[in-house]
Length: 396
Image (cartoon, rainbow, N blue to C red; front, side, top):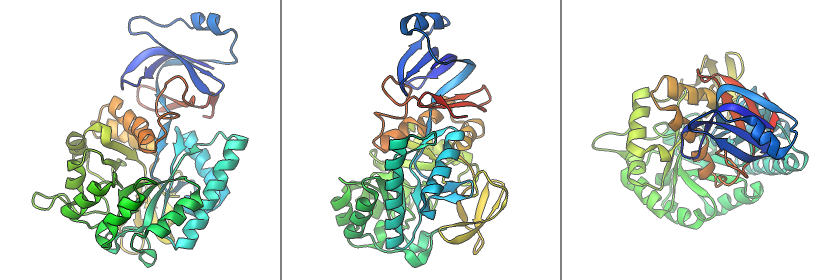
């Protein structure tokens, strides 16, 4: 496949006129011209006849997006624990430009989580053997059960437990290495620093649904934790005398931070300030979407709790707390650019390169680079979706 007449997003985080050539499912050649249009005939002469040449008509060509924290869509949730649910989630995500996924678990009983993780591991094997046009399952983000009852949000308090290395290892074993992040609330266990030191070389440790103060969060990050789950949400506020988790994230340059930029969870001014405070290289856009995403308004469930969804706002029926989002990652990226003032070049990196690096998958995903999977999203000048190509095959 050749995709010509596009503005290619480069590893330097700029757009340049160019041509993309995908062969055998991977990027083979990227021809960039800074001064004049590129002639597709020159590439055709090199490679001979090709099955398909697509005229991008001046579109932005960006890598396939990667969502490393979301729960579901189209009526399905990752924690449904079925291959059908994962397949339908993957199909929808690919259709809106998210070509690789790392869904998040909820706070459920340990044995149920083990079963969910084992199903995911089996699904991944089958998908790799048979091939799929849905998004690739490249990780799992465990949001619970090692969290704080005080900041539980939409998580079920009945299943919250202190962090435990033996139980964590059971999760890693059940997933056959697919679990990439395990969230903890470090203030909830005197053993949290020891837990981090034991597990940090096996899995990324994140701070999630935590009421930790600045000092406790600093201890966790200095012990080896390196990720913050949906910054600002389900954690103490950032104030001038009590900077909390957010201040500790800012002071530890090795820590990446997720942001839900759906226009509901974080004010645009705070998004802009966070990019300035942390720097764009540490920011990861996530959707945190739940099963209502891509569905009509109504009542749904998340982690066994009832949720009302109106527009893009999802709230618990029990107390009105925000319960994930009803917005996909492409919409979040569009929102951060068009309504929050973040440059497109920056936003694309935060939805592609940065999550790929955080997942340890940058060799295969996250940029339009020869040798990587041929996943491309074409957007028009208003950032509307025009086409999704996954491994050289048009899927939308």
